[in-house]
Image 1 (cartoon, rainbow, N blue to C red):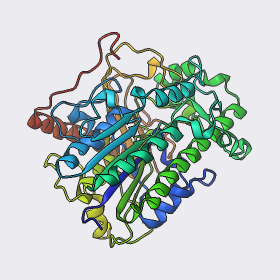
Image 2 (tube, rainbow, N blue to C red):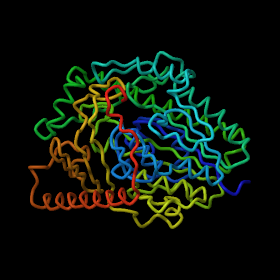
Image 3 (spheres, rainbow, N blue to C red):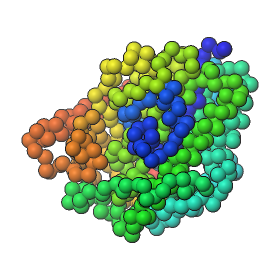
Image 4 (cartoon, rainbow, N blue to C red):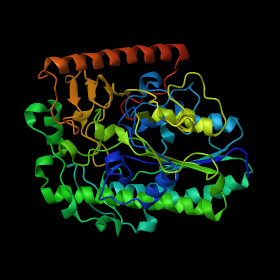
Length: 474
């Protein structure tokens, strides 16, 4: 057996933690993820540093927060002079490969021996466009059956190609890192048969929206842009049911890759990592997809690390302490025996787990999003209304008790997570004296974190990637 293990990193897109059975969802079904959690490490409080695809992925692959790498909204590209995870693994003797939705066009394709980007591959692009055309540009909540067989869906085709990559990786004679990135369960909410009817909408409870007077002002424009008021209860239940179907279809693709590793006798020396870049509203607050906001449903994601059988780690360990997706950078490098660069802002989760993971790594997680100055308007069905983009930089902090977001455009938000876990009643302007003291401390923490990140950015002399704000280049 090879001394250095293989790593297979599997990611969904817009897969929120509350939709995962391993995080307590009693309706969704993910037998593969459930099994991986039983055989490995489950982190029940893992958070993304950003609710948008590119910034979140950039943080995972560079090991620093958006405020450092300067990719804070979807139109920015990864910086030119920060080493990326595949590059570091490649330099240390790993065969590296990526397939699917991994943001090649946003400078996140560096360091791969083999790669297959869905936008640059006709078969994958065609299936992607078929899925996107299922939605509508005028409303945010359509859902239903994808007009493709399950074995010809975008996710199934990505899996087909990734399995071929396993053959190349195995033939390389090197330990390998394979990143397989899927669009499911991103909006528009359409799943191939039979996954579109796998769940009974009548069994699904609708998430609360909250009273208008307790919501930020921009929500009014967002609800109008999503045309939420035109969606009936049956429409919303069907949408959530299809979202769960997309997750079930995604879980099936994960299982196919696992089976391919087993057939090739590669599984015994392979770590399997399962997560998502960020979450999704899926009807929460009456909204859909995701926005440049820092809510629980958009930042809390599933995270499972399944080690090889002889790793010495306890199987089925559930770790409730706060984890940041930037922790994956030093964690995956640590698995490979590579020392992380000193600028990495995360922690090695495996090293922590070997100590018992009894002492929390942190008492808060931070996130940043926005600073968008481009020309995009509404980008449904797969995007979001233009009114939800923030020209200012929104920065937030989250503890187990409180969440706070500093929003220079629409006003700050703060929530008592013990009494209001769905973050429906903004406390700013209505807080009691004890609440005001707690929120004041959160403001201080955000300012302190901002200073630390900007200091690190200056030390690293970050050369930002092209920001894509010229008309026609977004």
